[in-house]
Amino acid sequence: MNLITLTLLTLSQHDHEAPASVGVLTALVVDTGCYVSHNSKGEKHRTCATNCAKSGVPLALLDEATGTLYLPIASDHQNPNTKLMPFIEKKVRVTGTPMEKGGLKGFAIKTVEAASQ
Image 1 (cartoon, rainbow, N blue to C red):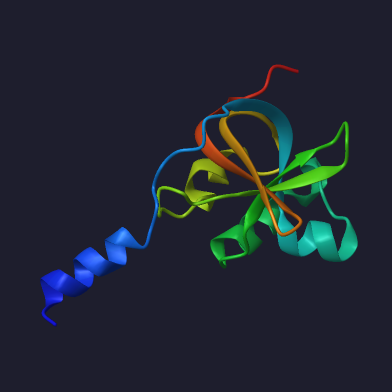
Image 2 (image 1 turned 45 degrees about the horizontal axis):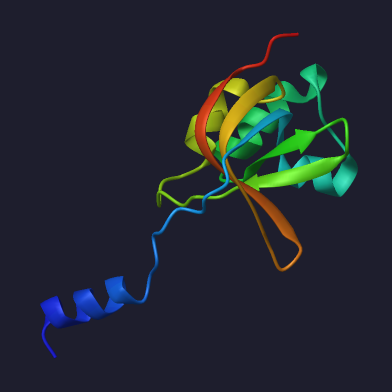
């Protein structure tokens, strides 16, 4: 098999059809390492969360009303932290596609902006 055939086989096994539902979520951007392991979040935790994210710790979206944590899904094959870095430990309004699989709640982010307080 040549490289082109292998590439075509790989692409044919990877479905990029976008799910139909589009959602809006208002959430707090948290770093998963500190939030999940010792419940750290908020303004006082911003410097630590920023350092964690720069070290590769995934950021997530915390719906404080329900306590649900959403992992940003890299459906565009780009680092999902990049879109959220300017908003660490701040409330955001994101649009995109909510997803769930194997107990994991995710959100493929299309747009992100600061949420109105």
